[in-house]
Length: 285
Image 1 (tube, rainbow, N blue to C red):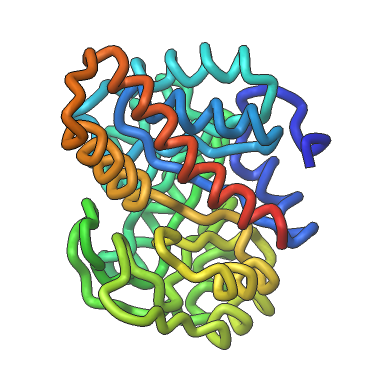
Image 2: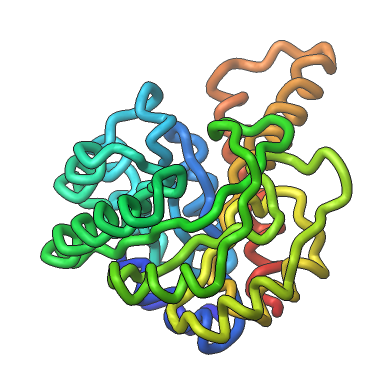
């Protein structure tokens, strides 16, 4: 699997085409600061797997786009793996342009809450701009419900319509399509009810890589089924936050008084735990 990496900052389309064809998935892991960026890239380096560093529009209060780009590029240069720098869940046209200018190699325009015609038109406009800069574009049809501990906007679940997906991909020229098939943003409140039948219908008529948002807490058997039926990218966000906070709380409750510098290193390690868990799951299919 390490042979899949050539060691470079690369485009989303490049690594996902191979993933869908060979029926594995690449993890897209959300980052919010130096420690999470380092954890994601170090985990990828230690496994020898390509990885996607995802920075969401929601986290702009934490870091500037140019800061994220500089850190990721510096760390990726030393890691020797393929790294995609991805702008996640962005609804702002201006922020997408800023991300492209800052050196992001992939952007996700989230127009899923818009009427189909408006989502199609705006997504196609962004594809034209991004393609001129060699940047990949992910878009979304349908809507995921909100689970526990999610940092995304609450929404009513709307499954992706397969025929609309085919028309949308054809009209926009996107590189990857995020689909709604029953996963949630955040952690599941009950038993996951993922509709593989809907995914199969979409995959049969849409030939680009498909994306599964809401990977945190999704059972491995469901993940494997999704990858076998066209999913090439799986997003993980909430579990990075929940697991890391739980481990840090336990550390601080243990009676020790560690220096902040030591806590930061622990944070890197906890992030790596989650990234490795899911990367191995996604690549083993």
